[in-house]
Length: 93
Image (cartoon, rainbow, N blue to C red):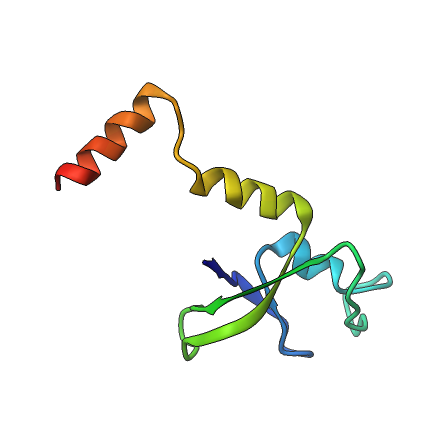
């Protein structure tokens, strides 16, 4: 399940990557950039587990295509011998 990695204090949204967070601010400059949601941001239902915050279920987590693809690859089992050894050790524990 997807979980957020950062929040926007201004609009309260949850983001799966810093890249997605940065892309929701339009304009230049560091201060008072308005929150926007470009059409290329992906929406998924996930969990908020950021330290110090109350755990929230079923929140909308915004991600970029690139970060979603990386997360999916990390969730998939690997065919590498090293990954097979790690998986076997975890199963034996």
